Amino acid sequence: MNNKVYVGIDLGGTKILAVILNEQGEVVRRAETATLAKEGADAVIGRMIGLIRDSLTPELQLVSIGVATAGTLNAEEGIVTRASNLDWNDVPLGRRLEQDFGVPVNLENDANAAAYGEWAVGAGQGTKNCVYVTVSTGIGAGIVSGGQLARGRDNSAGELGHITVDMNGPRCACGNVGCLELYASGTAIARSAAQRAADNPEQAGLLLAKAGEETLTSRHVAEAAAEGDQLSIQVLREAGLALGNGMVSIIHVMNPEVIVIGGGAANIGAPLLEPMHEAIADRGLASMRNGVRFVSPTLGKEAGAIGAALVNRS
Image 1 (cartoon, one colour):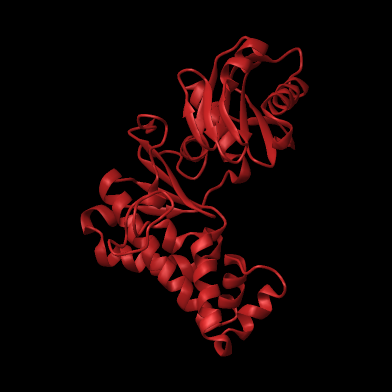
Image 2 (image 1 turned 180 degrees about the horizontal axis):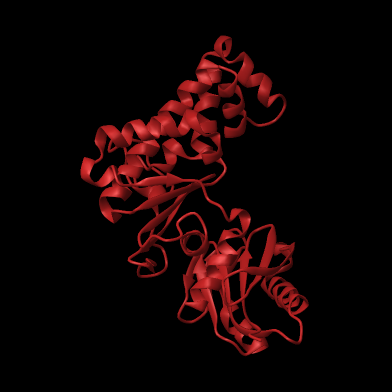
């Protein structure tokens, strides 16, 4: 009986998710715990080690560990060079795990890991060229090209949110101007809606009612749009057109077979995605855009952990 298993970890700012995969890439166990990042890197790594140990049983033969995390990485040295969500700088995470478990450990950017998971066993399965785009607080992408994960020089490939869609647009915190993230992310949607509501309060009654005493978010905009609120519909349309412009760039550069669209803002659906498709149809090269399938992710919150484990398996 083959008892070889691969561990994947999704290290987030609020929780640590662990999955154990068999040789077929199937999840056989899963567990999670709070990150409690304020307690420091040593405490967080200790919780990761405990989570893995508790998930393994004596008959299982651990082959490798993959960790998906946000931030910048020195993957060759197993170091998280900077993770703002954890307040980590130059943490030798890979080395610590290798010392404790005696198996290879691989660190992956979380978007790259999620892309690889969806490509290998999720919505992009069966393709050679797949892009995973997450539209959430920000916008990011992970790219599988020719069956290989495109990491770039320092694991930062796929910064779709920071391509320019407006050369005369405002300056982004990244230093660029007119970044896609400033127009089509969940944060941008909420910001645009709040500004329009402040400028036209007589047109924003339903939207403001959705938010109530809370800070207005893209979820409130989506809910108001679903009930026919014209201000919210217009905000989402403009965000969708901007998103489509960004998609044209990724289609032209990577020539994918499938684009998987995930993240909270992507759950808005037609009010955001239909304008996106309009922009693609208007601006994309017909020979490249016509063959692309757009699909929803299938692995959910486990995509990053699964992908991190599967990269090691390959």
